Image 1 (cartoon, rainbow, N blue to C red):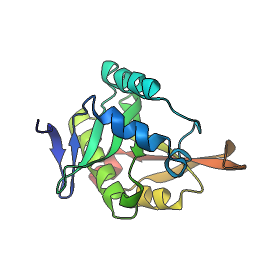
Image 2: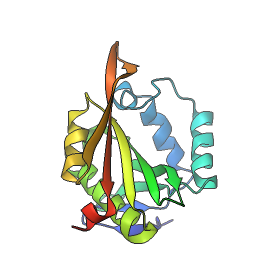
Image 3: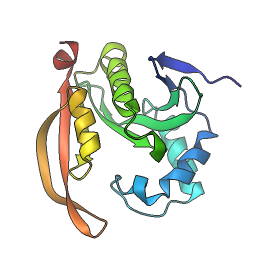
Image 4: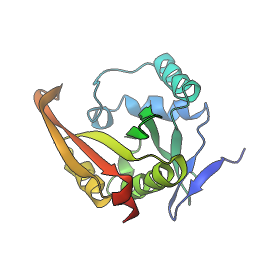
Amino acid sequence: MERIIYLKWDRISLVIPEKQDVNIMYLWINNFEISKNLWELNRFYFENEEKFYDSLVLEQKHFFVIMKNDTKEIIWWIWFNDFNKLSRNAEVWICIYLENELGKWYWTDAMKLFLKYTFEIVGCNKLKLWVFDFNKRWVSSYLKCWFKEVWILKQEAFIAWAYRDSILMEIMKDEYLQ
């Protein structure tokens, strides 16, 4: 069956997720190089990933998978972890599942496409995210997408035998439109 493309960009698309995508998530979420960037460093079980997927769909978290247009390969998931309808503010979470796709500009493209969705379709006023300080590649990518660092929580998480700072970044709609 052909994937349902919600928004298309040059190299990637925001695609409606399907239950089969849980298989991709399960395989890669248990890879330390990927999971060390998450808040909860843990082993993940297939049943839990299915429940997580179901909760994102059920709670309508503005949830998409990101697909490479040329190969139709699913490389990431992206969603609003928190969405305040009254203030029109949201928090985005993005998870990459394919290590070999790092450093190929897909991350920046995906975030720019999601910004288009957030501000031009949903009508949000502000989008925010958290990123660990050791993840220089992601911080750099977010800065290329016009996010600004607004807060640092010192020693917020204990990952890979060290305390890590967490950086809050945000972008406002008027900054995006400029």
